[in-house]
Length: 130
Image (cartoon, rainbow, N blue to C red; front, top):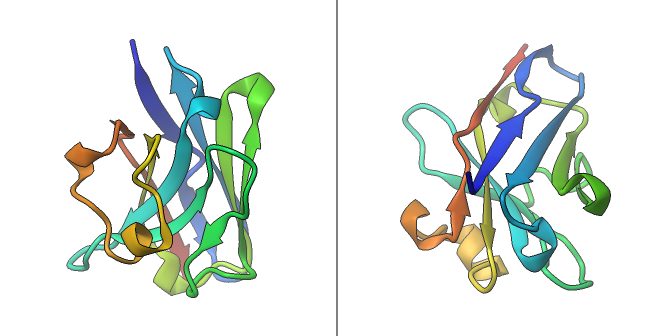
């Protein structure tokens, strides 16, 4: 089955860390740019970070810059989002997405509809207690 599967969410105290995983099943993540989005209750979906398909600088939203790090593990066909110094405002459902062409600073600032991405995961809940 071709899909993206997120994991690693949970409940953590403010200042703590979590590492989210986005695993590809049935296709190779290296062929795609991979991005992370989040959506908190009552808020718009927000682009958090993406890693380009080819060698290039990852993108981070200003709200997470310096705290979050995105990386690839080619052997495990997985992309990670390391989240440090978590804040209550980081609480949200986090989704990963894969697409060959859609990712840019502009589309992270104004995310496209989910059905426009080649693949979209089911989401993982992150809750940060203050």
